[in-house]
Length: 234
Image (tube, rainbow, N blue to C red; front, side):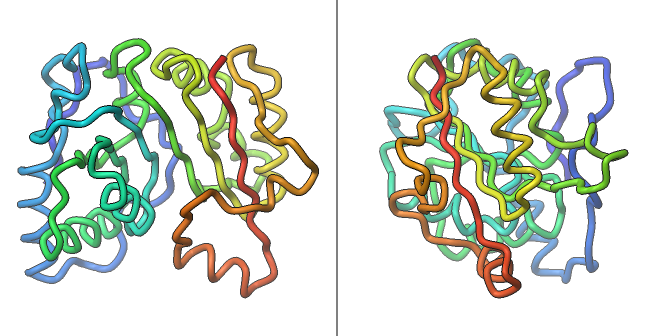
């Protein structure tokens, strides 16, 4: 199931790769349908001016995670910070199914989901409405002819700058050194963002409370150490 999409008059910008993996088993498909019916964002309606109203419980802040994979980090953050609201975006059907199945076992009421292009959500959100954006291990698109599909670009940084509050953080993690360098160059060239590294080793230190992911563990086993970047919205 897909939740209704906003009428932006454009198609997905396709910053992600494949949409589906192995066919879902019956229980997975049911969990996906029910999970999106319960937690899915309906972009056909305008976003509330106060995003905290998206949640059925009182929250103090709202953060966005783009491309949450199987949802390990997002579930950890939402469970560890019940007074914060989280929006998770994941266009890969199998990843979203894994997330909704996990939420069926352990519900989280401070979480909303979207199963398509994150730019739809970014364009739907009000100005200055987010307290943070996380983009962890995005598709690296390593071939030069595909670089235009990398999610970090000046147009999307403009989107981030519009929806982030002053002082909010954009966090980026990757095990692909060319994409790390790409992100550093783009963010340092954008007037709205300031890199928060204090020492040369800072970007090799995981975020406080970081639970790790299965993808990250695989990257480390294969000799690709991750980098963790934090940029402040000026």
